[in-house]
Length: 370
Image 1 (cartoon, rainbow, N blue to C red):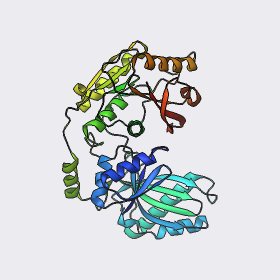
Image 2 (tube, one colour):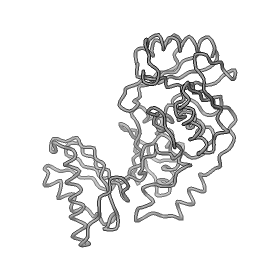
Image 3 (cartoon, rainbow, N blue to C red):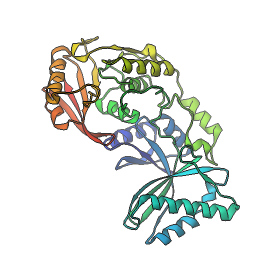
Image 4 (tube, one colour):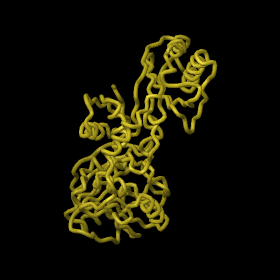
């Protein structure tokens, strides 16, 4: 099958490297995604193991159209009963960029009508729409005159690992955190520090990477498990092959934050995930901290003037640089920040810089030698 793994802008190469390591064939990076080839077993494996993918789509139908009427007609004639019947619920996720449709939701509505009309004629009964928990989630993508219909094999999105039971102050997306960890070069062969840990996403994703457990260790629900062609014996075989228990890692992970509520969220998440003993955590002010080892990698997502008011943002980042230079010599530090000009001014030797997005915020992700 030709498949598509979606990710965040800036993480395409990271995802491609992960796919190649997993065994994907004929990878091709595109904007916010990577096309690749794999069979049914690899579809299951990629959903379980990919840390930097948001979802894995299976394209099933593609066509050109010149009018709304032709668009409906082409959708109506597709053999939807291969994937749906009246016993299945469905939902449509849409991305529409076309002059033929002035409103993207209308394109999704026409698609829904075509599906329902086709199946009602064939079965005399229609499937129901369930936007919250569909059996089949359909991805509708229209670019001008070209329409592509895909099935979302992952739903819900792969960033929903299942370990986050408590959150604190707009936590960073798990897939973005995993991608930043890969961009930083962290591979588990050094100590890892997160001094602004929030609800612990960086630390948890660092443990996943260092331990080699599969990314979806804590969840069981995937869209493909509700499909007509789901092969449970094959899935259980793949799951058994990639599963490994929670265990020790060769180097330490340190996580800290200034806020009590943050550390409470971390403890809830790590207790559920059964990794509390794998991460050394506690309340601490980064600017009063001391390293707990001779070297390591620091990955930080400093506050965006929300939790901690930044009266002087430029001074705040300069102080981060001074702290790293004075007390963390020999370390490498990576910072993600929406203050793209200010973070460039941290007075340390720069390793590398990437443009990434944290939600809708354009950010810089920069590595420094301390």
